[in-house]
Length: 185
Image 1 (cartoon, rainbow, N blue to C red):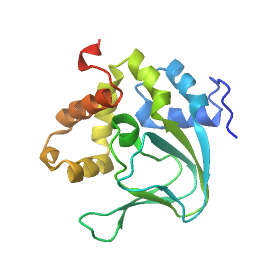
Image 2: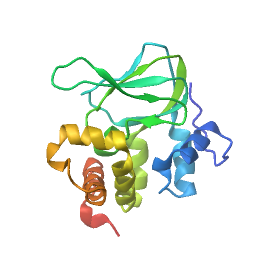
Image 3: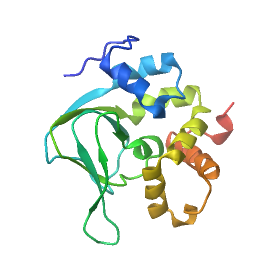
Image 4: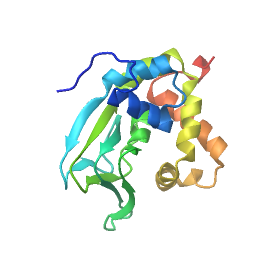
């Protein structure tokens, strides 16, 4: 059962995890306050697949406890570990913000806890302040594992500089939330 009472208390673990994750840096404190009670606590067991590569997704996970592995497969080859994740990490940001399919399978290597944030919970903030999409696009462009996933899915963008790629991703974010690019003020 998740507690959905509003809280601006930075000691609330949901609010604290939003404050630590750089992806949410463009949000004002009041916007993070509004998101915190929307985070859903998800316990996971060792061996559990949190998400599977290629599946549709519209949420991200903020890891609080436990260890996970991001597994990536291309060209029908067996999956290989693309990275390790642990407390303080997040995954699923591209699916949340752009609606892109999951770029990796994330397997739990130990029991743990993550908070899940859904697209519907972020939508009111982006619709109220669409300019955030550009900032989020820049942050996503800086994340190497996101760049790797984009390059695999969109080889035409492989050699694009980070600023241009950030603008491109910002456009994908607006499109994913059905916000017209002209809405940015």
